[in-house]
Image 1: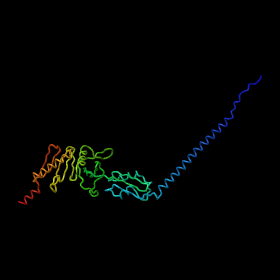
Image 2: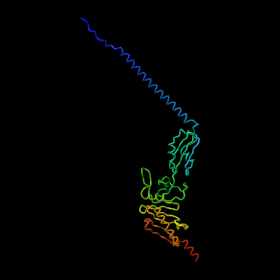
Image 3: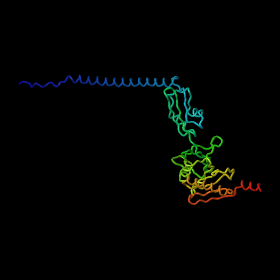
Image 4: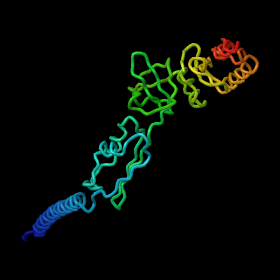
Length: 291
């Protein structure tokens, strides 16, 4: 009886497969290590190049151009920005400089730009003062043309002329900032922005009656002292029309009643005007001397 021949189940190629997988793993590890070494070397080279560029004296600031300044001294800007000609123009942080500059009370905004020829340009926008606001038990405050308080007013240090003084406004906390707002403030700003305030001595605000001004020379006579001041109640709106009517009334009194001067006007309602007059002391004294 013959034996059944069994097929050979031995697979010698399995050994070769394990060897191939081992070689693949080694190759992958070598590739990973080489990649890390390449990245490390590249990083080292880039750091070296960066340090070389930012520390090279040939790239130090050569010129600093400052524009837009009127009240702020250029020396103060350089000191605040911590800028010298010994600093590399590529090393400085432009955003940090801008942030330091706007901390100055007179600087509203600042833009710093560097050029490839080692020139640093600084563009300044200063606050434009509109009025001085007096608040009870607090220091006087300057507001700009947008109505934002930006600086404590100092009659000694701030060389400002012909700014009207505003009373009756209150500061309010809005988003962790102290600002002026409300109907009375909006009316006051409307008046300041729409009327030439060169002859306005004071603006008094009242929540019930609105804006009342103390103006000088609203008519043509050259009066001095308190005789040259007239108080005009204007309410909350329509300021140009009301002031035009006040001027017309003043000219009428001046022409037809020269012995009288106007002390005050009430134009809260432009259709119903009240005026108060008194004797012109200058003319009265002259007539007595002539007699």
